Amino acid sequence: MNILAIESSCDDTAAAVIENSKVKSNVISSQKFHGEYGGIVPELASRSHTQVIYSIVKKSLEDAKTKINDIDAIAVTSSPGLVGSLMVGSNFAKGLSIKYGLPLIPINHIEGHIFSGNLEDPTLEFPLISLVVSGGHTSIFKVNSFNDYEVLGSTIDDAAGEAFDKIAKMLGMTYPGGPLIDKASKNGDPEFHKFPRPLLDKDNFNFSFSGLKTAVRYFLSNRYPDGDFEKDVDNICASVQRAIVDVLVKKTIKAAQNYKIKNIVIGGGVSANSELRDTMKNEADKIGARLVLPSMDYCIDNAAMIGFLAEEKSKEKDINEFNDLTFVCSPAPIRAKQR
Ligand code: KG4
Ligand code: ZN
Image 1 (tube, rainbow, N blue to C red):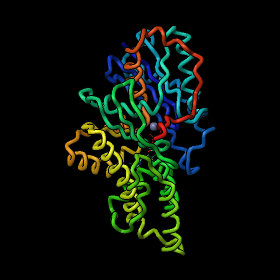
Image 2 (cartoon, rainbow, N blue to C red):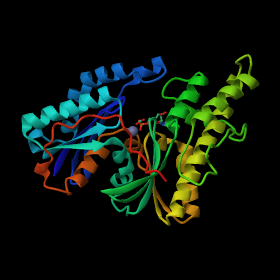
Image 3 (cartoon, helix red, strand yellow):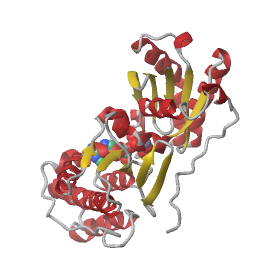
Image 4 (cartoon, rainbow, N blue to C red):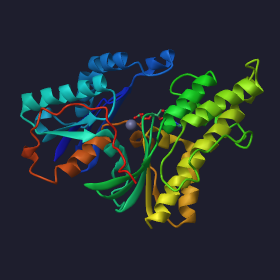
């Protein structure tokens, strides 16, 4: 089975070819220009997707040494994300599906991140705890199989990546600020200032990061009324990063202990964070859990995870039944059940 997968939910245009769960190509084009606006401009994102999607899909076929006629199905991210961006990939995929008479499998972007550990390591077994942490999402999932998972908790306000990006902006950094805070933190003291760890001691798996953003704003204006925080910027970054990582790791480990689950996976752009990776590994070791850390290519937004999951979905029913071209792109995230 050869699947051509397309992902365009936010600011990366990506395409991949998956053959029998193996990644044959994985092409990503990132829209760097949003940095000058301090964040993603949705209209510019969708225009940029339209400009590059044809060449990215073509390259993914070339890299895989595969012809479109050898493809058995198309997979595409249909939700959640920026609707204009999602529509570019979805409409392109619908066009290919019609022209070549191929089944079309719509995939949820967050589900793609949830199962990126299984893409990374096929020996990973269910059940597992999956932390998906990105610019738009922060959730912990209890995953029983490819078709069965539940949200244990999610952020009640900002996503962790959003907190990284907004705090970086306050510190004069460009977008996306997460990787810049990660880099600066390596030279800073995480004990420099203790920023709040919201909901850490609450008996649930929800997160809240908007208070941290406000705490940093007040910290900067109180401690540096003249705006001369530059000399301490590495220390501030390290302290902020420690606060975010602390909550992400403690809640994920608590979920694993609570449900007696021995496999942990992290996914989404923030899972590229070096301190998060190291701390999660240490804490998983302490409770005897196995941690799968997807490689960077599968942490960030990518089409390989979309194609991989589509292949799993195609095992649920006859591939030719994936013929609904009327699906609508939706921004709605996966919601937790009320607990
Ligand atoms: O999953 P992703 O590529 O796109 C979304 O679906 O949001 O995640 C992007 C987010 C951004 O907020 C970015 O700042 C963050 O991931 N990020 C990081 C790091 N690399 C990317 N945050 C902290 N440390 C990093 N090394
Ligand atoms: Zn993502």
